[in-house]
Length: 126
Image: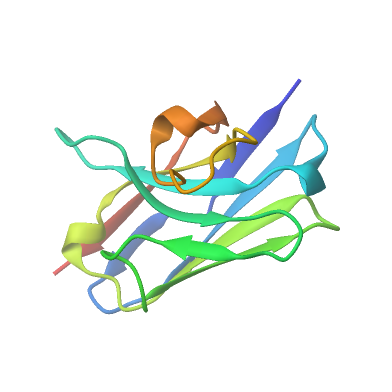
């Protein structure tokens, strides 16, 4: 059974930092790109980052570029999202997901992802 479990969310003040983790199991982790998404109340799910398989190439939405860094540890079957300079508008539930092998340039589209975690809440106070 494919499982993805996010952790590391919480309440943080503006300009603070958090590191999210996504622990995975039940599939060949090395063979899949992984994405991070977030969803604020009343908003659509937004793709914010993706990391590829072999070279670990990373992609970021403009809204987080320069502030968030995604990484993966293939030995631990885990991906991370380091979030710095957090803003109140970063408040959302954050999800990780496995990418369809054909995701290509559409890494930011939720439809390109097959398996999702349950999410972790991030709240940034002003």
